Amino acid sequence: MKYNCLVWDWNGTIVDDVNASLCSVNDMLIKRGLPTINMQQYYSYLDTPIYKFYEHLFDLSKISFDVIQNEFTSGYNKHIGENPLNTGALELMEHFKNIGVRQIIVSSSNHKIVEEAANRLGVAQYMDYISGSGDNTVGSKVQRAVSVINKVTKDYSKVVVVGDTLHDCQLANEIGADCVLLSTGHQSKQDLLTTGKPVIESLYQLKDYIF
Image (cartoon, rainbow, N blue to C red; front, side):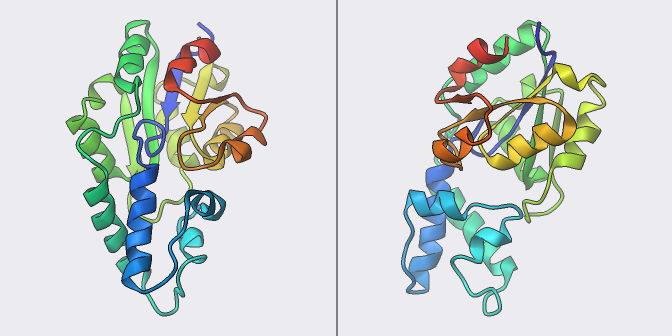
């Protein structure tokens, strides 16, 4: 096989949650009498760490980031739905596990939230490791990725990152892994194509690109 380790992103890659995120953000804007944003604006504002995204929308000197995080989480949970997995996610995870590919989730989202959702949605059974952030700031996940991947393999030429943002591509580049990007998540297809990496419109295409 070309790869023996698959590093999954969570939000927008395994979980189809971009619309839930947009709706939650707009709930916060409506609450304050501010203009709502559309998906193209959401894509253009997205950044890491996540407070950079909110700088486009709020005066962060007048509203605490803790308030923003709590309101976003509440709205996200309201809009996300019972089964938000991207089509084909579980089927592909089972396939990769059956052929001996080690699978890891490395997410910028809160570890406890990701772990609980992965168990509830049937994802955790296919994962060797799940690594989320220790807080809700959605910061860099490069160092955590290295720490977890090293438990599985030291040969990063056999590692592929599957994500939906430029940050996922940055992660792959920094650790010397390959990358495939999903265009239905939190970054526009146009932005993803600038990376030169394969960009797919469905998780089912992973079989064609990486094995």
